[in-house]
Amino acid sequence: MDDRLAGVPPGTDPGVLADRLKERIYATITMIAVVVGLSFGEVGALGAVATVLTTALGLWLAAFVADQQAHRTVHRHLATGRELRRMLYVSSPLLSCAAGPSVLIALAALDVLTLHAALLAAAGVCVLSLFLWGCVGGLRMGGGTPAALVAGLADAAIGVAVALVKVAAGH
Image 1 (cartoon, rainbow, N blue to C red):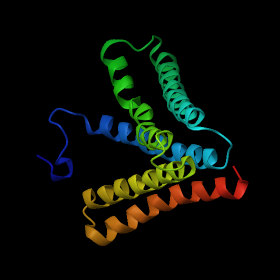
Image 2 (spheres, helix red, strand yellow):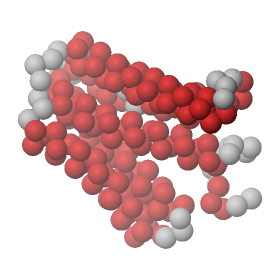
Image 3 (spheres, rainbow, N blue to C red):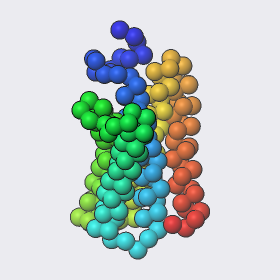
């Protein structure tokens, strides 16, 4: 077995896994913007969790519609069966990006922490996850720890940049 594929479930197409991870990273970057924006608003916990959940659902629906549109344009029919299952599998991380922020917002609703702190913590967790994915990618490329850390920092910098743009815009 190829060492680069260590940890990948047997029989899983690496291209599918790469597409799935791409969606997760995209959703994470988007969620950073959403939770930082919410932290500047006058929204309560219910409104915040509704925004987070509808954002994730909207991202997923947009990706699914785009996938179907592209598929039917190229193949002249809607995706069904195996093709449809692949689309749903690849796009599902767009929904899961709401899990962490929703848990933190729920803690705020239970008065464990303030909503502002929960939203900023959610942004921090998202940036941390970008860092970790960057590190994993760097390690899998065989560059060793220094290259992995540079890759992780580069990915985290993108998340921080998104947060700073939202802060600079005041929303």
